[in-house]
Image 1 (spheres, protein in one colour):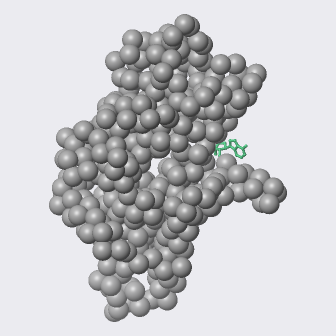
Image 2 (cartoon, protein in one colour):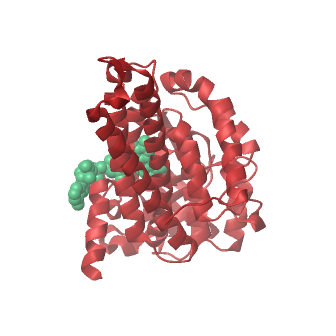
Image 3 (tube, helix red, strand yellow):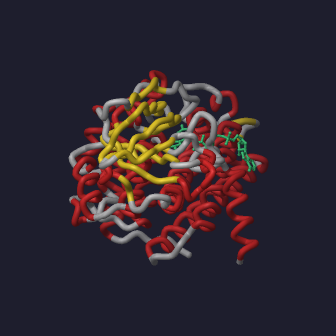
Length: 378
Ligand SMILES: Cc1cc2nc3c(=O)[nH]c(=O)nc-3n(C[C@H](O)[C@H](O)[C@H](O)COP(=O)(O)OP(=O)(O)OC[C@H]3O[C@@H](n4cnc5c(N)ncnc54)[C@H](O)[C@@H]3O)c2cc1C
């Protein structure tokens, strides 16, 4: 399978690449060190429509297909995966609404995001991440309202979210069938956004706790039907995992590029180190992993664009691309030797940024469980 970009895709990729190169890259080291959420920089990107790529045209977005979204997220992730994750999580929150919401809900959420809003997807809790069905955040119906109680953690974009998609259970004994999804707006009494996590990597992204104490929302904010929340989350995550894999591929490509550049210039024993067989083997394996990662992403994206269910493909891509990002970034540090370990060079950041791609949106252990279960069914 070869990936040839259409004229539109190439144009969009160039626009995004130039923004990342000119606006983000010059500040990257300082932003990474500070670990603050650079809201003004995001707003500049939003002015160019970065956050609206996945929004259908009828709701004011660019209406990009999944394949194009993958190309663009890889390009953003090549410069900064944290920047890309911020956009991915807004797209994930939105995707849940596009999957489960009615017309009024789709319009309402797109009207928040299109003018420059962030979205948050609130599934993980302090007591459960992988086992999300065991969630403790509850909801109950009270007249024309639902009342939510509980707490969520590791919420990307929590600090600035214009909309939260919150998953809660009516009764834990019902398992997945007890879980529903809700649209919650910031400023609703009882909703409190906690501290910004100080993270190893993805330091341009914002991650917070969200506490819900008697949060009363109108009944019309229920997404889809009661009991369908987990279905909505999992369908959203199929797309989310492919997007996640696209960003991890961006890390692979960036690490490979940095390693090849360095290996051509650095000399040892009278030759550039790229002529040493041990370095050649490492670079070749890094290139193979990068290309294979990309092919798995686009295989999944094209199936998604064709309207197929892609749980297995998304889990495969997420696992392989996340594992590859860690391996390729770590090997890039090795190619650069001592300089790879220094903050003067970009690869140590890539190594830190890569690790999370084996953890979030379902750890790579959980993805392997999903793949194996599908194999058993097939
Ligand atoms: C930077 C960042 C951003 C995030 N953004 C979001 C977000 O926007 N929204 C959101 O809802 N969540 C988010 N998360 C949460 C993330 O998805 C979870 O951390 C992840 O799903 C793992 O859950 P956990 O941390 O509770 O680990 P646990 O579930 O406690 O797992 C701990 C370890 O046990 C392993 N394990 C658990 N169960 C099994 C099993 N059955 N078989 C084999 N191994 C198993 C896991 O693979 C892992 O290695 C984010 C996390 C981070 C760090």
